[in-house]
Length: 400
Image: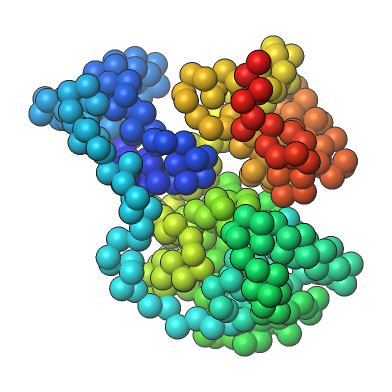
């Protein structure tokens, strides 16, 4: 991503650290490894598969090494040591230019009341906004209301707030199964419908027929390109991406990304809005499928799922190896529980449709079984792990 000028070092590391709870991001980790070792690995990979981004990154690392920036042991790499800025308490604060931005939004529509959509609705409502939560029928809305009730309990526990406060937040959420009624006064619409190209395309075509001229639109799509949908909105300059992580009030990353035609005004408004719903604001300057977080996470999670599908070992052992080797607080299957296994299933299914790989089919099958059993991840109390008594991987006994 540095080689493609998608985002800067600090934004990328903030994204990883906030989402995973790790003490350093990819560039802090490279400082620990040493930039000379990083360069050797890059050159070896570039010999077998030459890409412009790799050469750009090789040039960046080469220049740093020539300046004596070899990593942590030399006192400087991507960061200065000791006391690198990622260890400071204000590392995740929004920079001054984002603090000074404005948006003017008051009425927000969330399209999609699934596991993540319900969380997004509650997070937006916690910022004092009036929220309309839309889903396709009353049955779907009833499930969304149940999710909101469960979120209230979890939010109260996680955030240390009173029942009165969570009830006040929930009171800001209205429920609609009619798209016109849900959007007719919206300043911003946040799309959180299933991660499926056909479903999203159909939704945007319907949305374009009913939403007001003033309305801005963002997609939360995890892996699909926003530019694939911007024309269907009828207002590509007012369209961008805002990506949330599961368990959003804790993993409060807000990746704000442009599509091909997003105006600077729109981009700045969404940055300001992300700030005002208590997200760690992460600007992405170019369209990157998977944003920052999933660009980093998907290869890791896919490799872990392949190991499991091949029967190499069990999911707990895979997590243990990763956590010990990288000093991370969570392994890939714990991260999958946070992402949500419904999302993981949709991504795996899309991959299988492209590859027709027997390994990808095994991954789809075991994720589908989890979804069918409502083992959707930490948000519902069970995924790969059972969270009845807390997160098992946080226990001292986990590594025994």
